[in-house]
Length: 268
Image (cartoon, rainbow, N blue to C red):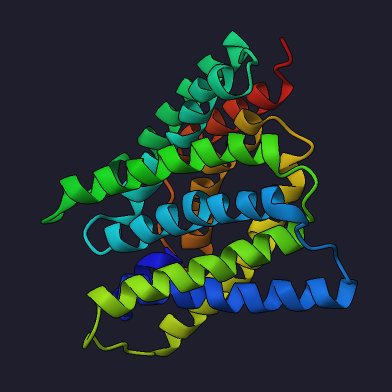
């Protein structure tokens, strides 16, 4: 919802670069105060560089671009495919089997998200390329989760996230310079609030916690955040925007939560 608000008033790549830039400043300042260890050697710097592109720049660049043309509801539904993609990549990248009941629960969870947002899925002029862009971001995010699990264990989560966000700022900023030159930004109060919410809560706090949890959880389990976030957005819409919630939406939400619980508890 916040991305949708922001990209209606600020060019998408510029908005994403500003989001990452603010978050990077916050996290790197925290890292300096904590005297956290930075990457050591070419291998750790390579991990940061790869994740900067595949976890930050591509997924969020395409989401910001796509939400000019597709609804937030459709974005939520398409993004909910990420846990399934993560699960399908697990045997290939980590050589671990995903429990069958976890796979079934992920399918049920995705169905619950579709049911939850079915009435809000609208079509726009460029819905097909927008949807494809979101799915490309889902694939790169899924691949990055496994790559980070395998290669980023020794990196400090705050430093790792801060450096990735800083790199993403530079890459998205360059993209904005070449593709959004002459496009104006309209800094209304909703746009400013959305930007700082995304930067602080969505990026600085969100990704710091994500990498901390990734050291302690299986990637397919952690990816269930893609199923939880839309429910949080629905509750925010009810509390902040006074949007209606039907009994069907409540039922679909409970179904998703049960599916997530099954995934988190599945061990074999």
